[in-house]
Length: 44
Image 1 (cartoon, one colour):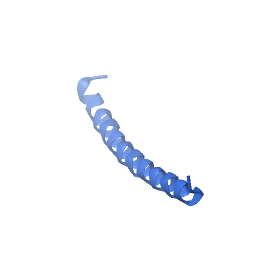
Image 2 (cartoon, one colour; image 1 turned 180 degrees about the horizontal axis):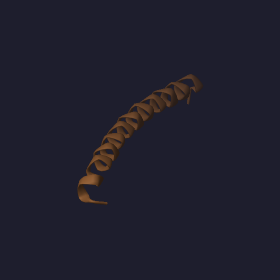
Image 3 (cartoon, rainbow, N blue to C red; image 1 turned 90 degrees about the horizontal axis):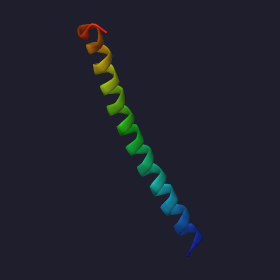
């Protein structure tokens, strides 16, 4: 396997993972914010 190709695949994989992780992190932050807002309403 060509080493340059391996590096390219890894770089592409890393950028894909980073974008996915940030998207999941943003969704998670939204859920946490909603849950935090609903806590007082639930009387917790």
